[in-house]
Amino acid sequence: MAMPGQLMFARRLGPTARLLIWLLVGVSFVVLDARYHALDGLRSGFSLLLQPVRETLRAPGDIAAELGGFFTRHRLLQIERDALLAERARLMLDVNAARDLRRENAELRTLLQLQARPGQQVVRAALLYKGHDWFSQRITLDQGAGAGLRSGLPVVDAEGLVGQLSRVYPGSSDVTLVSSPGHLTPVVVERTGQRGLAAGGGQGQLELRYMPAQTDIQVGDRLLTSGIDRLYPAGIPVARISRVSRSQSSPYLRVECVPLAGLDHSRAVLVLVAEPRVTTP
Amino acid sequence: MSPPDQIHGSWRRILGTLLLAVLLEQMPWTGWSLALRPDFVLVGVLFWTLNQPARISFATAFCLGLLADFQDGVVFGQHAIAYVVGVYLVLYLRLRLLQFDPLRQAAQLFPIFLTVQLTVLLVGWLAVNPPTSLAVLLPVISSTVLWYLVAGFLRLWHGKGIQDRA
Image (cartoon, rainbow over all chains, first blue to last red; front, side):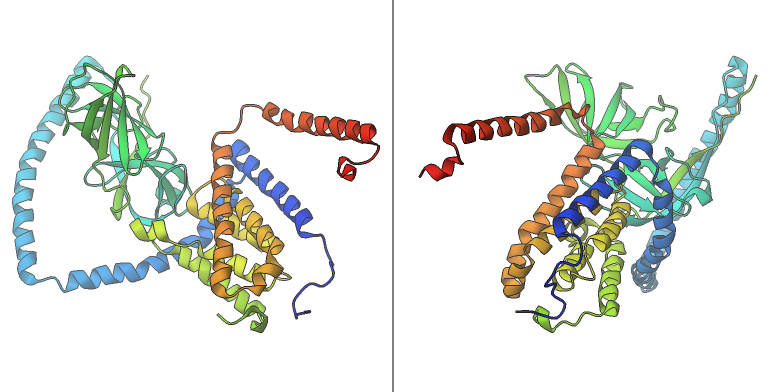
């Protein structure tokens, strides 16, 4: 009956008492963190400790991707290069037009004495880790306060808005995705200019809220950020409308959208770091 | 897996497996692999709680729970509390679990893992939407008082406990 390592006699507190003590400690941690944000130091410590580990563990995947790229066929590369050159020529035209417009815009703004819009600066970051959480959808990036990031900055990829920085550590940062439940993004419908609020619905979906039933809105319309919150710059693509349905009970339309950005599978993203606004007298 | 009484878990082996579990959780899991990923750390902690309760129990579970909280970017304490509850359940069922072969052990651990996960959910929900006041807990006190009154009244009425009447 007696096994080595088995406790025959209680030499310390019983399990129930220890459970209660640890539950008390746990509850105090929850309160300290959720109500008083007193444990951010612990979070930064964990992040400093774990970031090299995460980067090391990501390396095999990166190396495999590199090797796969190395053995791409020459012909494929040529085709891709030709396509990119054509694209570049087309984009150069647009850039010239945009430069002209920007100059004209600046002149008009000075004429109208409007405040100049802050310039945009970007920080490249790579996806480091994905956690699973019941209440929100987050990813971790490999850039942090060291690269000049702050909490609240928008994160985009080539296709559209990915999310917003919610926590920043010294060398990494957490992004809350646009599809995270309850995350609101002020948007404008590209075709009609109708403003609205896109709320994350979880499961990689968004929902356009409070659209009156007679609104002109169609499946396939794109939603852009409206810039009304001074947080996201205007005009970043957010989502495409996938389904519009009317409900009998509510005066609003039920509009479902699919985010345009590759939310959790794009490996490289950009963080838009707005320059501090210069206050002119 | 050899039967538990043959495992002479040394500190090196315990720490090695727990470290391995933490490292496995750091891998860049995505998509379905992320959804299906077992909670390696929890499995490790509960396994060593079952087999080496004198060495690995509440404190280790709590610290590793804090680590899991950091990993998922959630409120500190969410996984810590859940892991501690899991450890308690394993300790409570320990002598019984040790009798079983691995298949039955796994079947018995299923409700424990479920409880742990639901505790994470409950604590997270309470932390995200804290109740507006603690007045919802007042019925607990009034029910206790009512119990005292009912039990006391019945004892006075029958002289002893009510079960003695049979």
